[in-house]
Image (cartoon, rainbow, N blue to C red; front, side, top):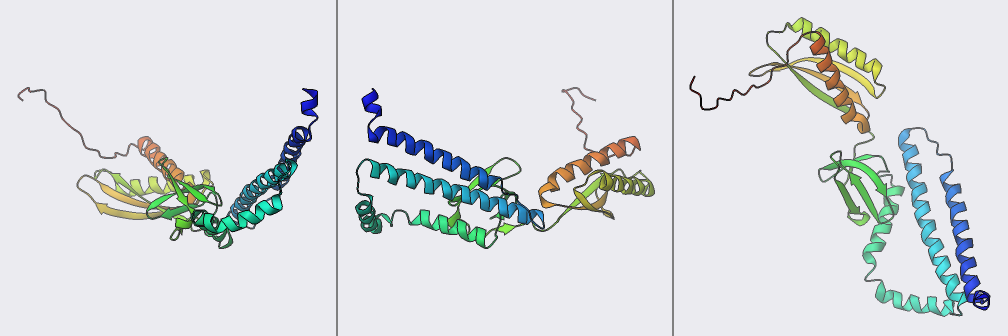
Length: 265
């Protein structure tokens, strides 16, 4: 056993793997500890995405380094091997064209600042948050949980909607018998309190009566907030409106179903 371990190929392999792992961890920790600063949240997210890309590239470089070093250790002439790979590469290149297109597409996305991890994007009607971005593919997660995985080469038309504020329009159905002045006062109070209570809300507006429906008067409000928080903000506002309506005894009309179990009335 001792003589086996003393072989250059054995202890050399172990040493190369250990040293490479240590180097990889050190460099990765250094990259991850870089203080990411920017003038706005979008610039910060962009820099974080670039750091993730560098981590992926460095990982592949380390794998190539380990393979070549081990081949040299076992007496394989890597120079001639690389020359041979260069010749064969012309043939293999046909099979890896798509992968190269993905890598080039990923680089273009970063350089042209199309989007970064955390941005909300619209790809052919699929609206979601970019949860992962690599040099080959991008993952977009919808609010309902579906995840779309896209090869970077296929991302030709995508809309980044994160950089603009979101305007949420809400219509609040209210019973006809409720006094308009009372309803408007309650809604304005809700908006004022919500603006102070939730930091994600940037602007609130009571717009007035939107329409007269068959069973209610529909009052309209508009809230401006960050794109990434629009769904949370909408749910919070609806909750505040319901609580305020309940405390002020304002009715929200709803359909009622009357069921008869075959009994003549």
